[in-house]
Length: 460
Ligand code: HEM
Image 1 (spheres, rainbow, N blue to C red):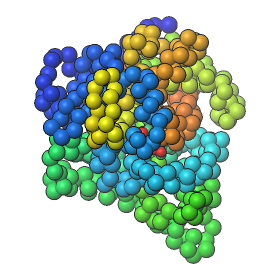
Image 2 (image 1 turned 30 degrees about the vertical axis):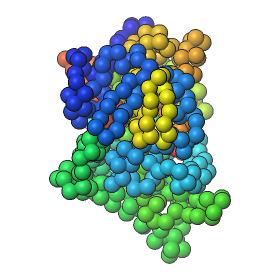
Image 3 (image 1 turned 90 degrees about the horizontal axis):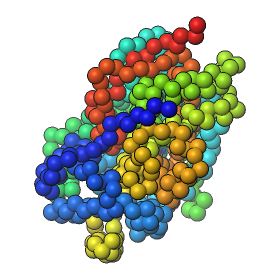
Image 4 (image 1 turned 135 degrees about the vertical axis):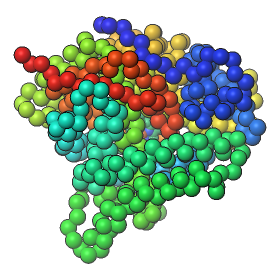
C-alpha cells in the first residue's frame, strides 16, 4: 500500500511565549501546539485567571473520562461557547440536570435504532447521488460543503421525517459558519477574563444562533400543534421519541424550549462532526488510489442488487476501517475540556479547582508512544491484532465513559453508507497544488476547504 503522510496540525515550531501562544489560539485550538505536544504526557498553559492542562497520559485520561462525572464535569467553557445556540442541552449540562437528560434520552435514542433509521440514511445518500449526477460535483469541487449537506440531510430526516431543503441548508451553513467562529473567539476571550456580553461579535453570534434555532424550532412547533389538534403525526422519528420521553424516576417530560435545546444538539453534533470526518476521508483516499480501488470493489459488492440493503453493510468492512483511521488522524472533536473540582496532583503538578483539563483525541491518536507510524494513513492497521492495545489505550474519537457520544453507532453507519454511495459511481482525485490546512475550533476542519476532483468511474 502507498504510505501517505497527510498534513498534521503541527502548531507552531517556534518557541513562543504564553501571551503569543494565547493570541494564536484565536485562530485555532491547534495553533499554539508544539511539535512535542504529540509526545508529552502533561502540558500546562498558565493564563491570568485559569490554568489549562493538556492531559496526554492514558491512565490519567481514563481517570478523567471514566471516573466520577461530578468530579470532572464538562467545562463551563463549553457551555459559555454554545449557550446561545444550545441552551441547557445534554452536551453542555452537568450534575442532576445532565443525569436526568441522559435518563430520558438514552431510551429515546434507542427508539431510533440504527437498523430502523437505515432507510432514512439511504434516502439521504441517494438524494446526494442525484445532486452529484445533476452536476454538484466535478473538477475542483468543495467536498467539505457537499459532506455538510448530506450529513445535515441525514440528521434532519432522522429528527423530523422529512428532507432538508436547499434553502434551509444555505441558511444553516451561512449562520453556523459565523456562529462557530464567533463562539470560539468568545471562549478564548472568556478564558482571558474579558467580558463580551455587549460586543459586536457577541450580538452577531446571537443573531446567527437565533436564526438557526428558529429554523429548528418551526417544525417542533408545527408537530406539537398537530398533536394538539389530534392529527396523525410520524411516530418513529427522533422528535416523536423526544416528545414522548419521560424520566423514569420523576415522570418529567421535555417542555418546548427543552425540546429545541435537545433537537439543536442532535442536529449540530449529528452532522458537523460526521461532515468533518467524511471530508477528510475523501481527501485521504484521493491520495491513495489503491485504498480507493479496494473501497470501490466493496461498494460494487454491496450494491450488486442495485440498492444498498442493511444486510449488505457487512461487505463494507474495509470502508469502515478507512473511516476509523480517518477519525484517528482527524478526530472531529479534537479537544475535550473538563473542569477540575478538587485540588489534586498529576505528574507532580498541583492542579487547582477551576483549572481546565483538556484530554485530546488528536494528541493521543498520534502519540508516538502508543502508535506505530502515527502520522501515516494506514487503514489496515485496524485489522492487525497488535493495534488492539493501541486502540484500548489511546483511541477515543467518540470519547468514552458515562459521557460517551450518543451517536457513535449512528455516525459509523452513516459514514459507510455515504462513502460507498459515492465510490460506487465516482473516483476522487487530488486538486493539484491544494493542501488542506487542519484547524480546530468546535470541530477539526480545513481552513482552506477540502477541494477534490470527482470523475465518473470508467467501467469499461
Ligand atoms: C463522527 C461523528 C461524531 C464524533 C467524532 C462525535 C464525537 C463526540 C465526542 C468526542 C463527544 C464527547 C464530547 C465531550 O465530552 O465534550 C460527543 C458527545 C455527544 N455526541 Fe457525538 N460525535 C459524532 C457524531 C454524533 C452524532 C451523529 C450524534 C447524534 C445523532 C451525536 C450526539 C452526541 C451527543 C448528544 C453527545 C453528548 C453526550 C453527553 O454529554 O451525554 N454525535 N460526541
